[in-house]
Image (cartoon, rainbow, N blue to C red):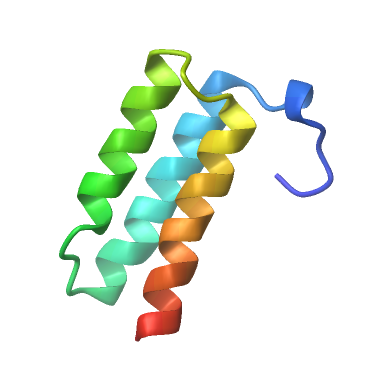
Length: 70
């Protein structure tokens, strides 16, 4: 998903990316609020509150915060 403009990222690509992030975090263990955060991002994506690119950015932020913590 690197080097793509916001309009190039589809809804389905964003969903697949978020699920990939969920899988990465599941393998790390100790997921307190991360899955809930990803669920909220998906809800906002589904309701067109955020763009697919913003959903990806937010999911990456959740993952990056977890990695920094561990």
